[in-house]
Image (tube, rainbow, N blue to C red; front, side, top):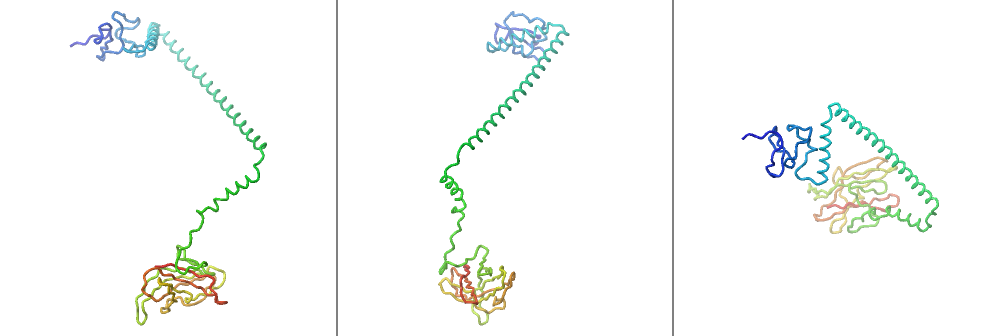
Length: 299
């Protein structure tokens, strides 16, 4: 079947109108006209209207009027000589450039006006605030005191309070309980004790409970130490002193400022399961008083 030539032909969808057939692409275009509407002047059958001058099949009344005016302008422009067309196009471009420059100048001027207004408003607000602060008297004394009290509360909140000390049988108010590093400081000497370990019986000695310890003098004077100051409190509540049977026991001695020593303390193993307390009652040789003791809670 041979395709019809490019031009207006009866619309296959509506016999009362004609539709433009594009022979080059072999397709019906969207622009139509009434039957016998005639070809626009200056447009050949091989030169259809541009897309912005075509009339779609379904448009609003406003769209139809706009496209009709565009079609008339296009037809008039095409009828002009080539030189006149070039001059007209150059004039249109120049007009758009002038309009753009004017718009840019207007936008710049408007922006400066807005900045000036904003600066004036800000200065006015600052002046009003300063006038208010100078003219308004300070609040009365009770209010100021309440504010100060409110600000001081965070320093004494319960979140900063120290946790209560652990409980154990025979606890005293002046006990120094070991911290998370196992350290206890009593009157110039700092002692660190490790966990209890069971030592089986040997020769004539029965089973022992021993713990490694380290003594440090962090004070400024020489301090005396004695392994006899240590004792153990069994889960039954019975308290016993140390047993000296090994060469690496702490024994006794003096530590100058900055000095340190290490060793072990051992106790009789009574085979009692549960919580054991290692106690350090440091004796003052001047009056044999024990103003403070260290406590290690061990299992």
